[in-house]
Each structure stands twice: as C-alpha cells, then as structure tokens.
Length: 119
Picture 1 (cartoon, rainbow, N blue to C red):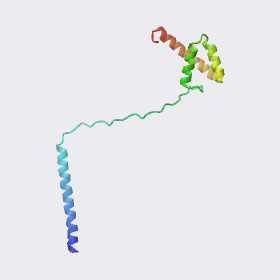
Picture 2: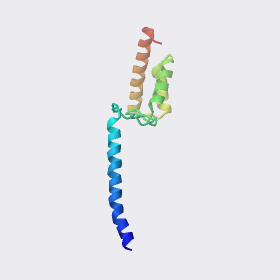
Picture 3: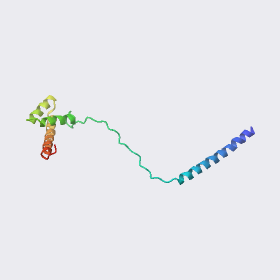
Picture 4: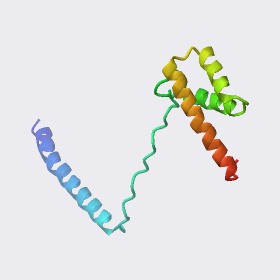
C-alpha cells in the first residue's frame, strides 16, 4: 500500500515536470518559426432571397409595372391603354395615377435613350 501511495505522489511531480518541458520546447519551436502577416478572414455576404417588391401605392410589383409600361409605350394611345389596364386590374384612382406617372417616366426615359442611341 505504501508503495502505491509513493508512486502516486511521485507521479504528479513527474507529470508536472513533463508538461513544463513540453510547453517550453513548444514555445521555443514556435518562437523560431518565421512570422506571417495575419490574413483577414474571408467574409461572404449572405445570399439574399428575391423579394417581390411592390410600388408604394399599388398592388402591382415592379416587374408587372415595367411590363405594363413597356407595353403602353408600344401603343398608339398609351393613356387609353393604361386606363383599360387600370380598369382590368381594378386599381383605385390613386393607384391608376401612380401607374400613369410611372409609365410616363418610363416612356420618357426610353425615348430619351433612343434619341441618344442607347437602345
């Protein structure tokens, strides 16, 4: 029993001594290695899911509004076309006005781009 107790007490000192030697050896080895500049971690932007964006005053999303405006620009009477579309979509008077103003800006921008040669 005494021998086992002596072995346990003696073992702790030896283990502590081994750990210190191992740590000192590791520290010396790391100190001798050439230093490298720290690199910034690569941060990737999270992938955003497409969201159906709506115009502020209308139930139409931007893709629908753009399609309607493009089609109205190809009509001989865009105002009559937009009036009929507003009726077909049951748009309120405010929504119909917003659609007309959006299409007016779209058609004006498209015509301006065509005049400058940017089809």
